[in-house]
Length: 159
Image (cartoon, rainbow, N blue to C red; front, side, top):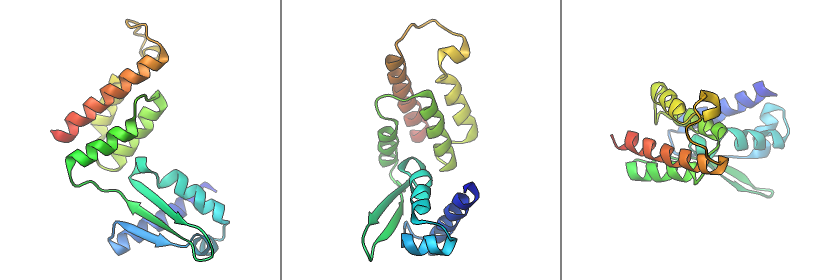
């Protein structure tokens, strides 16, 4: 199944390349038939690989003539890009979510590998680093991490 997921993802990404457009429309049933899978496998690929965090928005029209439209999010204006990133970060962020978000930003070319690693080190939990200078509740720590991440990304995007 993981290989099929990658194949479907690659096929959809190729459609973006062919059409050189910001959106691609397709039919779930036809796509499932061409890959020899059930439509729920297509749903899985869309939910896991074409998310807002990865720079996509998926619209779905159900019914006999239903379609799926995948829109590639691109923010030409730096302020729009920052607003999108700040919305993704939210008010609090777990350590796992921080890593996922930073990997996604790197894959999208918004930060490079070095910047990602530096940010990960700065936002690492005190349990991982052995530093216990601040005795904070998990909620307060995740809120501070989200705020710091927003500030770091804002400074990188506007630099």
